[in-house]
Length: 507
Ligand SMILES: [Zn+2]
Image 1 (spheres, rainbow, N blue to C red):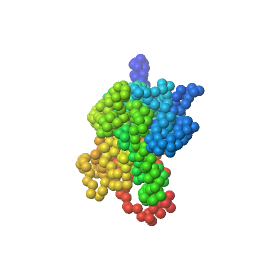
Image 2: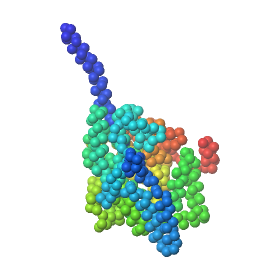
Image 3: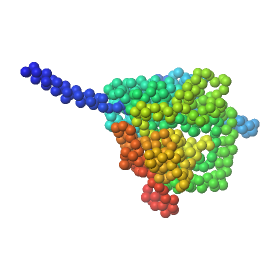
């Protein structure tokens, strides 16, 4: 009897101790935040005495001044406008030399690399309040799932995303094993979207529970697509819009008023003259000499090619490559385009079909980089809103869809038009799980903000979250940069002088 009691007690103890421990272990789905471009610098000879930062570049100022001076003198003497492009190209190549890829699309210098974090984030010291968004997001979700189950994946974004996928797969395997979980959740930020799609193509979606896309380039971005097809162009309106958005003062009315002022001053004679001069030289930049430098510096980075949208790809390939381009490079960019870039929607729909929950964040009412003809498309400073939302119909900068606009798709009878009539989300790939945040920066999501709280709630949510599941967080939100709060986008009254004045005094 004693023996039976001892065995019985042992079983009870095992059940009470071991079961919750097992339950807890399998309960947590680890999270991997897939970073974007430029989250960490690149170094040559990193960690040694000869360490040099190569990205962002540490330019040799004396060399650049010399190149510029010689270029200007040459332009004046010869009156040949090609000299300006030559000068800009030489500067570009001097600044990025150590960061270049070789003809085959691999790093030109073997000892150049970024900083990587192969272990969970509890192994590193991060100050989440002062970190890049990717790390701040990792810090936020770790509040629920533990830092020991949270990872920040950085990679060499110059290289082939399909080759990079092997490293992501390794991290996924490691995270699963450590947590005793079947699956992980991915939070791709910016270019992280490209890496995630490449991963899904190479390894499938069986290991993935949820994906929360943050300002992601899924199928490319217009800015790079235009540059790679030879469309450098400046317009006053787009430059002013971009500048005014950078000076955003945190109030919607002040922001709009500032836009109006900028548009007005853009028409002022002296500024118009300044822009005529800029335009004059910008046009001179739009020539073969400039594009030849662009090809040499960025054209051999397979990662940059992943940013070329499907509908631009054939033109870009014809424009950026020729019979001297290495077959190894062509194989990489063609493979990505044929299997991932042109099939992005199918890859995501297949993942969803396979049970993966998918959420998308897309931001608007910030400018797009004002150097191409499509810079009047709404964006978040870097990536255009139609790209980050996977297919939203978006009014051009400073415009609305119009009062007569009718929602393109029925989508269960839901209203998917934003109250400010800037966006129709019914044309998105995932209209019911795509959130739009007005005024938020690219990726954004500061530590301690409402936005970060929303991402944490989506990550904690059991199953597929939708824009109808959170009373506080409907589909169209706007961010207040000062208080870091989110509130629903509302229909806007036309600006009045008294409205502007009262908002200035209120802030
Ligand atoms: Zn819907």
